[in-house]
Amino acid sequence: MKNSSPPLGSHLSKAKPSTSERILVLDSLRGIAALSTFFFHFRQQSFFPDSLRGLFGSGFGTAMSFVISGYIIPYVLWKSEYRLNDAGRFLGKRIVRIEPLYLLAIGIVLTAAWVNTLSPAYSGPAFSIDWPRLAANLTYVNAFTERPWYVHVGWILAVELQYYIVIALSFGIISSTKPIQRLLGWFAFLIAPLFWPKLLHSQFALLPGYSYYFAFGILAFQYQVKLIQKTEFLVLLSLMCGFIGLSYSPSAVVVGLVVILPVLFNGMREPATAFIGRMSYSVFLFHMPIGFQVAPRLVKILGPNNPAVFFLTVGIVLVCCWVLHHVAELPLQRLAQRVRYGKYRRREAPAKTPSESVGKRISRSFEALKLQVNDPAAVNPLASAGPDFNSQNHPPKR
Image 1 (cartoon, helix red, strand yellow):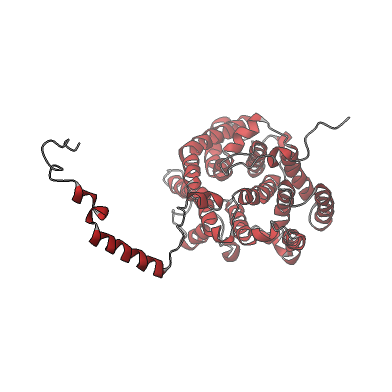
Image 2: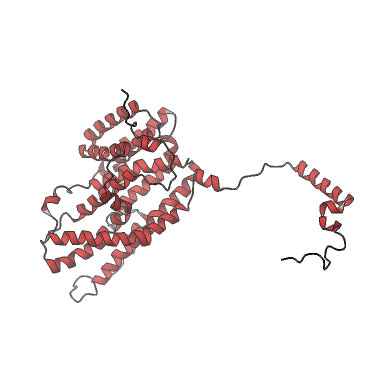
């Protein structure tokens, strides 16, 4: 009896969705990544439940985000029939999508710092803006200036932005139909950290320090769009897991598999995490700027060791992120969708008429002039309309 189950990844490869369609399983994974990042940053607080402290002791949410980006960005570029001359529009689309909310998060941090100085109980230094620090945050160059981030997750955005630039320039290699080019492009992501070992545990890490997470997603993308077959995928996946486990971290292997296997098997559609996943970028950006303003005020009311502080903080932050998602994030998504590239832009471009030689244009002009001399009515039909054309009997123009 034949196996009736669909082949691995067939739910994505049957149709060619537009760039606006969502892959539902990724919403669930984004929700898990956003919540784990949220909890990771609050795990040292006294009100954080002890039962959760060990579970969220590592930043696997960030690693999940890198694997997801490693998959979904080249997948969207592939469906868009991306070309190298689309790089500017692709990067512009990403900036429209992420930059305004990042600026809003910085604004919230600075505003909160200023408001706190207005309290009579405040005894710290006067509020001032460190302009070099602000400039480094706005341009994502903290990796070179070593100035602290106003929004702690800004370093993750910096790594993502570097990935966008690299993938925009190298997409033709990792999506090549030539096996050697495609393999070398993927392999470069896999081994890059070996050449920058000091960046692996640096707060100001650059893309090479985390590129092996993106390699998981890139390999899944290559299999998903049938650039590689099942046997090659399984062999490369096995080799990659062994290499990453021995050279970097066994936990990175777990994170990579937790992301790409549900994507390829089309599993893990939990409604709660999918709901959070749809607003994951807002949760990712604002859980610290909002949460660290809410939690201390709740501590004063409920006590420092009360678990209710944690759950109330989570609830308030999620409500605020839901509002920001609808007020700011969704409009920015719609605005970013208007930035077209690839086949979607080429479909909207007006069709070019075939070029006409200079000789043909001159010949056509002489023919038109000759026609006008011999028969003026052929060029101007109104000339033969007769004397009654403008008479009172002619129907008035409406």
